Image (cartoon, rainbow, N blue to C red; front, side, top):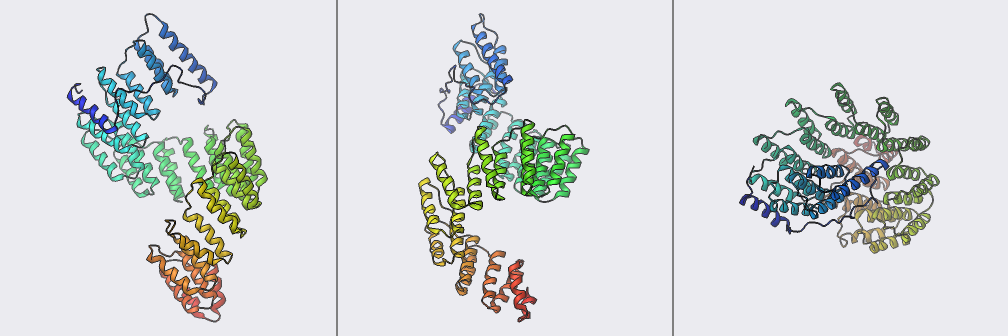
Length: 578
């Protein structure tokens, strides 16, 4: 253990100068700073909380006062209940009453500040530790490093890590895990594997938590091969994977449509007596549902129940989504009702799923009924809810009805996002009501919403389909003024609009200009321009582009095939090149 000497001063000053802290300042928390107003605890937990408050007040009045150990036990109980502000308030009262503190209690205070996203005050407590002659330990620094990471200050966290190593503190596996997790999430895998090497050099062995962070991030970045390589490596080194490891890999396999491998991995878990968690089952239900394999998803839920695992909101919501995707809205609503009967109250996400699909399948009466039910239950709709209703109203009723709903929301304080405007623009452009659409484009400025390439694409596509190519070209030329770069979708819209008007030479120039501007034509680009040439009987150019499309590995779509078949009676060469 280091002596509290110049090394401690260097450590403290390094942190202070780096974070610009005033070490004498500690966030004040008064005796009545805690509140139950936003505490989502059960009645039992609330009673326990009040009992702890009563016990604390009683202890303060005792003479002589109880030992610090008794106070620490009470504070620890409050920390477990996540009443961090209350712990800080009680600590202030203890200090005022002259009750001494120790390193364990001080670490608890640092943890509370970090959990409240006030890591700067956590460092202030560190300074106070030195003044009181208390020696920080690796738990102290792990807490502070974790606090920095949670606030997104990864650079400061790494600097803190380097400082404690330089001053002779020995990082433990928890220290490394705190750093490895955010680095992995950022995809800094070279740095992460470098840290693993340093761990080995320092005699600190990585554990399954360390590797789970890396494997999960590798999976999320689509690096499945690397994730399985690491999975094999840790098993060969005698580190046993747990359910978290398998969950990451199974989810990635399902997402990659590798169902047989996912099933094999699931069975491997069972053979190793690693019990699937509710998260495992929810992953399978969600992925099966999204794949349209709702019967399989329902079977997984049945297996869960047989094994004594009660489905949660996530599981039910995933299965409801699967039913909706399969247009089994009656079954979806029945399951929604089952949730209510079993005391698993649907949340905003569950309502949003049903509202979205009711709108998608032109059942707006049911969508509005659910929306009103949400309000009666005291649930607060979010932008996804509103956007689903706006989109559904445009699709099922009329853009005018959607606009009325939108305006009423705005009068009530709703701040629309770019998705809301996208939905309205789709609706009005589909009706060829471009005056309102352009008005919406200008209105976005009022809410300081940056008009992106998607917004312009909706307008340009509507204009081209309505034969207003001149207006679409004006918008196309304005993109650079708005600081936007046309993407493949925008080029395809313009190529299609030009071809529709018979401006094939101009369309071909735009087609070739794509590559000059850093965008390679995709399958849609080729099919759109080939349609144009074939429809206007320019067979030579059409055949040439069909050959080029095949060389690029793209296939003809149904429209292209139909045109080719129609013309092949006259030009057999076309079929030969398809």
